[in-house]
Length: 163
Image: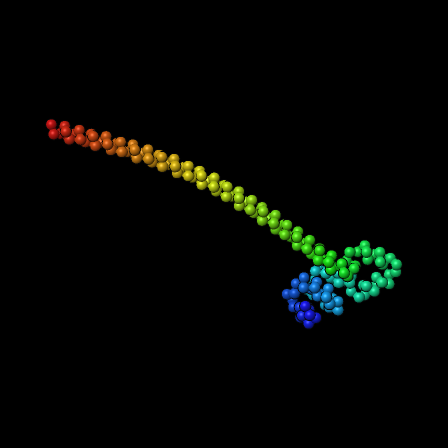
């Protein structure tokens, strides 16, 4: 990314937090504009405030305890502060992904439960259909027997009528 690209990105309302962080890291002279951007995150704004020229001068003039304070503050050192910011951003993204995965797993469990319920209902319907077919076959056999008896009776009556 060039300085001109960075300046152009700072004028765009669609510039994201990751691009703003990159601009702040590569171009210290644009940090003031980055901190004023609508999409700057609180963590990045804090990092810029801690790493701007006046803040560094204040730490230098603070005396012998300033070095100890910088070590205690993980965001104070410019080299590691962006890494810390990136780590925090990555941690947040990882947590978001863990939550999304947990939700997806719960949804999958619901689908599996629903599938098992539907399969059970299908099996019950199959059994009912088999029973109904058996009952129908039995009724058809009884009807055939009744028709055979009726035919016999009609034949017997016809013989009696002939006599």
